[in-house]
Image 1 (cartoon, helix red, strand yellow):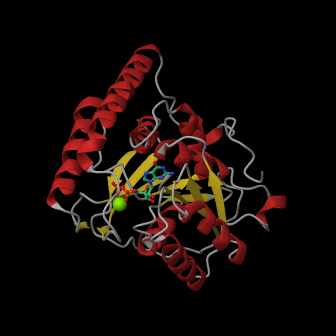
Image 2 (cartoon, rainbow, N blue to C red):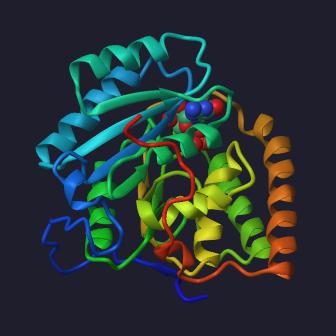
Amino acid sequence: MGGGLRRESDGEPDGQSDGQSDGQSDGGPKRDDAAEAPELSVVIPVYNEEAILEASLDELCDRLDAEGLRYEVIVAENGSRDRTVELAQAIAARREQVRPCSYPEPNYGGALREGIYRARGRFVICEEIDLCDVGFHLRALELLRRDEADVVIGSKAMRGAEDTRPLSRRLATRVYNAALRVTLGFSGTDTHGLKALRREAILPIAARCVVEHDVFASELVIRAERSGLRVRELPVTVEEKRAPSIHLVRRVPRVLRNLARLMISIHLSSSVTSDEPDASRTSASPEPPDPSS
Ligand SMILES: Nc1nc2c(ncn2[C@@H]2O[C@H](COP(=O)(O)OP(=O)(O)O)[C@@H](O)[C@H]2O)c(=O)[nH]1
Ligand SMILES: [Mg+2]
């Protein structure tokens, strides 16, 4: 593997960013689009989040505005039964940076992938509406802008991280990631949750992913690592604004099924052909939908 995974357990990366996006060096937006395209796309899958959607999005946008970032926030919803869609549309009407989209099936991974495909930014951050950790955005953007990483994971489980979730969920994170290390050779400490991505590098990887729901997020990271992309981890502090709506135990059967599918896919394909290092950095986007549509 040409890339592999590095950890930033010391927290803030050193050095200064010039804060500029040249939009050229790694296949970013072409010069004609550069004036309109944001530098950053924040993709947030949401499902039945009427209780915190509006306050979380307003707080997030205010923070990103205060940082002077050129950004958009893609709210990737599917099948919510509460007022999430209505609220997202109302927020989009008063904040031009907010772009809601709806995925047709109940599917976290599908909605996240749809959001990544629609993203126009050179950099894409995968967020969660109960986290919205702008501190992570800024640290990850520094690494991406300096071209020191293609994928930056916000790890809940590495040295320096602080995870305030209940013990059962902290343990589940540890057991799940240990399973990914043993079965799929993953070398990091976390795959689910906050991530920052170089869009052009990750699009071909997203197109190769075969599993959906929660495990899609893990597949994306593992395939990126296996393809030789530069994956780095930064420790994060996790303070959820509310407990998850789906109980941990109810998620387990589907996660195990998808994990088995992923193992078969990766091990079978690696016996036939290997993930090509660097191919994903140079090839054009697969066939994601036109982000402007
Ligand atoms: N689109 C979509 N988003 C979801 C779904 N399930 C959870 N989410 C969103 O994913 C993010 C994380 O969900 P959460 O319930 O906090 O689970 P956690 O990641 O285990 O903490 C939140 O923004 C949720 O609204 C789903 O089925 N579809
Ligand atoms: Mg959560």
